[in-house]
Image 1 (tube, rainbow, N blue to C red):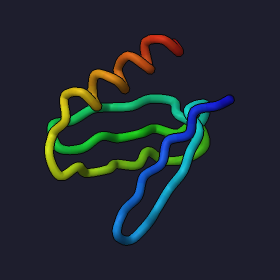
Image 2 (image 1 turned 135 degrees about the vertical axis):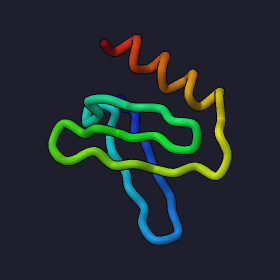
Image 3 (image 1 turned 30 degrees about the horizontal axis):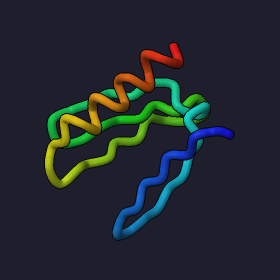
Image 4 (image 1 turned 180 degrees about the vertical axis):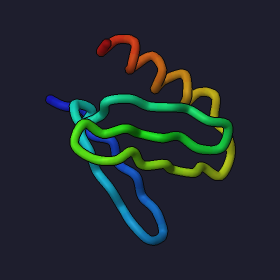
Length: 64
């Protein structure tokens, strides 16, 4: 079973599997996902969430 990441926005929805992710950069009010097959995408969040950042960082550490 592969993990799927889903982004739901007002203008666009996007789904990708964790295996498509090459890198994640966490910022204060956004994050950037570098995919293995195309240009990086940035996603802005309404409010910073330290828990979300910690979970993504842990996922990256376990798959590296």
